[in-house]
Length: 396
Image 1 (cartoon, rainbow, N blue to C red):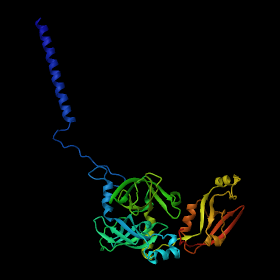
Image 2 (spheres, one colour):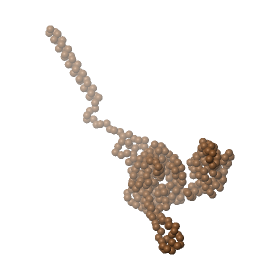
Image 3 (cartoon, rainbow, N blue to C red):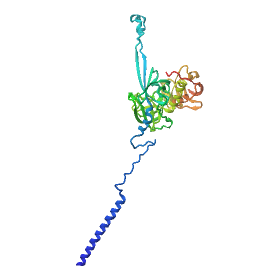
């Protein structure tokens, strides 16, 4: 009986010892795994975007970009005086005698005011903006971000590319907008528009580059020779002439066009094109553009076949790939060379032409007075014509 009690005591004691041992083992293990409460929390490392701008922090890449360029963005106010037309009856001598000759000497006038944006290219006060912002303005006033205002002098305007250069005398230490390269822009890149839309100064909108090389013909601006950067960054009246920035705060374009029938679509002139035009405007005050003198559309065999099968079509079209001449401007280089309506231009200087945009680019890149060898398809015949380019002087 006593032996049995001793055995039970020994078993209980063994269980307690095992329990104490396991408790000590678990405690030691937890101390090794769990950090001390006195240890500092691990630091959070900010990730960087592809442009090298911190994505986590007190600011953003948009803030950094705008701070870099903002001081160089200006507001441009314009004034233009127009004279209203006189009623035709007042040109009649009888009515002029009745009302008096003094009436014709007091023609009513009206002041038109405009608003746009621009940015400083050079510390001396050279500003780049859109031609339509300052064209035919009697007075140009430039307001800097710091509140100072200066009278602006238009040094040159190019309506074909919708660019203009304005000069202000404000010393030689003005902030300058850093220029990037539109050649490096890709679809999907950040696009930051800065300007004064609808009179709201220093406004910033953010989007992406939607597409590249959107031709002015596709946009519906047939009197321009441009391939736009398309963006969904909000661009409104007053933004015209302001900069379009990349994520690093470099100017990649000049905001210039919006479509009234579309939401969230804006267009900007590529900065590489603008830099070349700006230098010519500073030097010569104008830019010479060669032209042929034809109105044209892109032609494909399918479109030609569709036209030729239509019994109501006015004339047959060559079923080739090229550019169809819709109209020839009288007394133009094309008219002088013998190009006719209905001709299909298929080559220039032995290079195949497959679109109207391509033909326009070839002509734009040619020299004034250069003779271009133009191959046309007229009906079933092929002809080679020599066309000497001339200066485009009148957009109308």
